[in-house]
Image 1: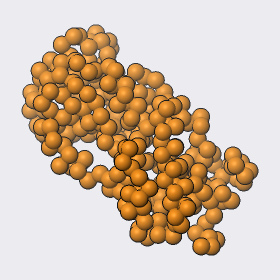
Image 2: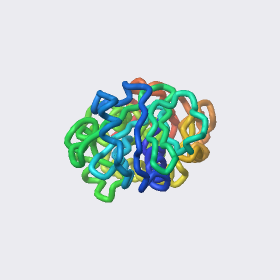
Image 3: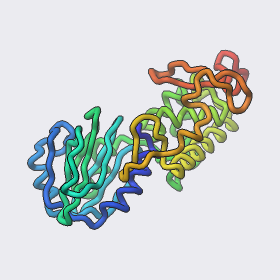
Length: 281
């Protein structure tokens, strides 16, 4: 958390808030967030005088383009950006501040301190980690059923683990994997190799529908997520399976179970999502 829908919402919000703003200076109080260059003074010096032009998303990363530079930011578990006036009190856990020439500031706050920032020359960011290792974008127009199948169909590990692997498909975190698998009626411990063509198509459509609905709702505020304007997402009110342990399934009435798959808490309807050992191909 945040996952693709939340990062997409942050991207859209930042495009409303910071485009055209020129950086006067940058303050870094937690050096380990700055991964490239590792010298925080150099990081600040390189950014001074540059203007934000647009914000894009690649998987769960923000790709923030300036005139002559690209800043790649990962929010990790609890990172958040917010725009403030210069005289507003500084909140605790604010680790990076972009001071703008118009008297406003883009502040990066991160309670867990796991977020990262990488600075590149334009074009370099797509050839180097962390973006160079990412898989297919599920909301891109060229994300097709055929490409989806090619990426994962031969995998013999559990489907949930595969979908969480950003090297195959990007941005689908724990919440949305549970939702997509429930919508498609697939148990998370099934392997991609065991899926029929019909099941692949159901899962493909469920991933796209789930993510689009979540984006439209501004993401899910399960814990502390808010967008760049401090607004909560609302998709948590539309979740069909995630977080519903011991509640009746919204489809069949069976009691929702919670287990662990690939080290992640996983919600399953035992009736709508038959276990692999009870599945007959």
